[in-house]
Length: 155
Image (cartoon, rainbow, N blue to C red; front, side, top):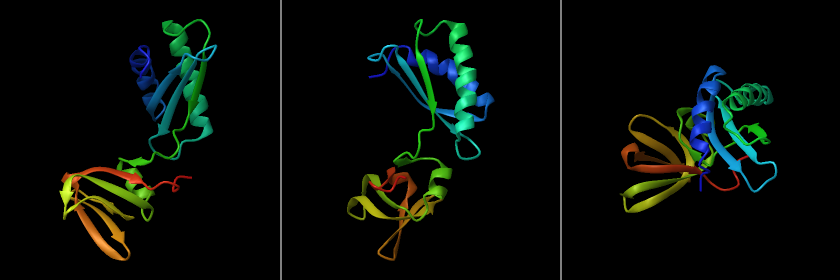
């Protein structure tokens, strides 16, 4: 369940991230910790996310949060990279994970199946393409619900 402060925090965090060429991917407020921990995951929009990106976002966001008085008196801000998401969504994901084993779940059965496993070849405007034991498979993109890395492939 999302903490009630998260939507407001995201409103403040998105413009800060945008100014640094970053994207806010996730935000979690752990109030079971003392002091509470605010974790913000960011992704660099043009290259791999590095420690420097996280440091810049941390400094800039801390200023904005403190000025807005949105957070309790004492809190810990952690800014990090989300790492590899298991679900592929962006064009960059589909390029980065070409050749990796994936599971494609379809919204309705395609050729009698709702789930396809294989090595990712890529996607274009109309299809998601896999190879399965050397056989090419093209699944209509309109039918694809989710493309997920198979367990054990993230690193």
